[in-house]
Length: 148
Image 1 (spheres, one colour):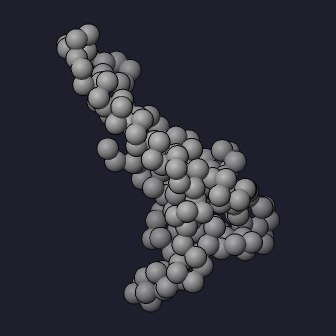
Image 2 (cartoon, rainbow, N blue to C red; image 1 turned 180 degrees about the vertical axis):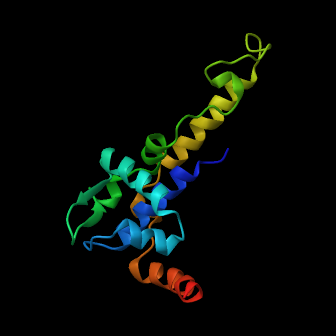
């Protein structure tokens, strides 16, 4: 299983916002730091704001910050909110045309694996995976120098 880029970027945005502390961060700043499309990141930020993970402050000096403490942001919840579906195989999706669906035992095993995956994520919060601000700067600083 592979998470979509949308979920990957959502987790990275939350990590970046956490590392910034009380400082507001901008989409442009994060797009530059991660070398990600600003347009795509805007969609991610909008979804995270609607889901209650980020707070957006409007205006010339506006930006984004976490809407709640990092220890209250569960990774499983973020992934559930950002993944479009968990159709691991055709029979999980709408429009299934697999001819062995009625007698197949694979969906049970895959559902069990998916549940275990999400349960593992549920044991972690943003606080448990987030970089500290100094760590974040050291990771991104070489990328900025290379880009300049």
